[in-house]
Length: 388
View 1 (cartoon, rainbow, N blue to C red):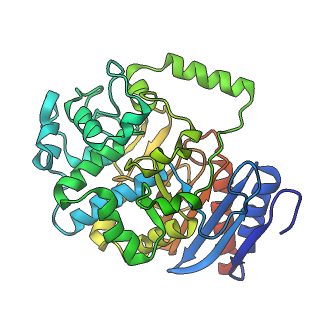
View 2 (cartoon, rainbow, N blue to C red; view 1 turned 45 degrees about the vertical axis):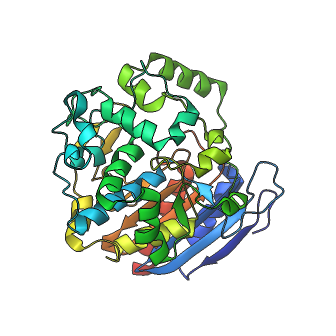
View 3 (cartoon, rainbow, N blue to C red; view 1 turned 45 degrees about the horizontal axis):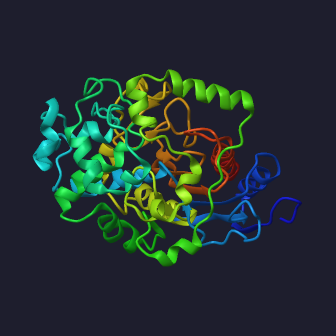
């Protein structure tokens, strides 16, 4: 497609033309700058598209190997590491975290099970605001894990979930490190990315990859929306402030080389849409987890209103379930994880579907960005047309 806005490259299998149309429409009318989208069915690529530019200067075209920081889409990859260990019999999801990480028992957390970390119910969604955290401190693994281990619960552990926006990666990642005997970046590479040939890493281990990264652009917001967001942060309670505003990050923070290099398993995974779709495709087809392990990962932990975000949620163990919102297609048992601003990865084992979406013009939403939903809906429109 050549238009005043972008050139789209790539292929769609016959019958999946609606996905290309939705991808093109994202550039025409939904503010897309640069992006890629890949979908697989039964392990075969049926959609592989990319287009636009890697930055706001619009002087470099998005390539098939352009890397994007996908924010919380990383959380699904982090949860997968824990499930790999559980599937191998090395990690008991229902055991106390302190069995593997003794320091976490401090401040009344001795009985908190690993399950509650995975489902955002640990009671420690962040560091309390009485200990302000600087952005550069996020790059210090030992500091962040020690702060979280010492943190008194900010809400009742095991009660309704409160989104662990930043803390999730260090909490689950430290359990993985203690059990596996290696950092989560290395574990993920050896257990998932390298065997699958998936171009995804939790933080960039190779400085050569910095040159492949898209530049993230903060959301475009009206003055009304910006004022409403500022008011929401100002009136947030201590739980939400700890989770979302200690420190408060913006999309452009992810462009800093130090941010890209750090190991922050909740928020700085870098990858391609192909890689994300490949990993979720392996989940959908049984290539990464056994059937019992996949069933456990998708087991609903109950519907709720999130104590941090105020949004209706239904969590599995580390993955959003499609639930009533149908965020991963019409199958309510489909699962995945979105990232701040629009990125996503998801799988629908019953239909053999997986998908990955990366972008650099962030939207204002935590999940279910309209561009993502247009693409996911188009995948299922295509499936319906084939099955008719």
